Image 1 (cartoon, rainbow, N blue to C red):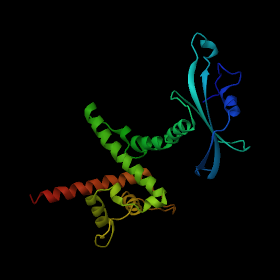
Image 2 (image 1 turned 60 degrees about the horizontal axis):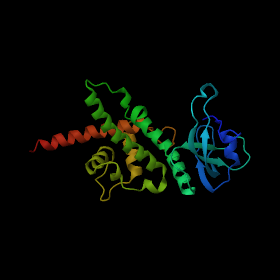
Image 3 (image 1 turned 90 degrees about the vertical axis):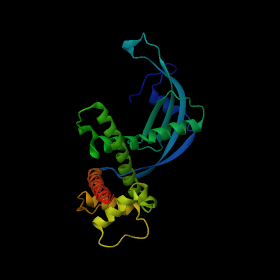
Length: 243
């Protein structure tokens, strides 16, 4: 977002934000990505109310009143983190500002979900069906699957969640069939954890971990999930022969 002109101030939005007092300090860990190193930062939280001035070529339009919430990294680095958020939600105190920041922080999770659902995982974008209704129904089903795949990956990346029961994402029959498919031993008395489910779903999807990263792609997890559902369907059909 570019720094917008304001009706109440000679300064533009970003300069106005710098002049606002800090009302709270927020700690944040920026994860490693590509060539960027992971780092811990402290952010100044600021808020105010402004009116965005209409563009010079559209002066007939009235300004737009909005609430501003800023989250600006402390220090003198040239590449400081800066979140400039505009909202119609009333911001009357620090709690209101932190709530808006919390909404913004969820954007990456939402983006990840849509990647898993639309392209990298269940690939709902490639579906070609005869009717709109069928497409909508299957898209909704795949959305639930995408949610579970994303939960599985998220839990794998958080140490304390790795030990949670795999029944949070796999039904009892599903994990037992996965065990019998890939483990050369009898079923365990205790339900396996999320780390086990992650690793073995990935293996079922063809994951080899040749780079020794311990991380499988969402596409591989989806392939494993799909194969497991086929195994589960075969099991259900076989069981129905006795009835």
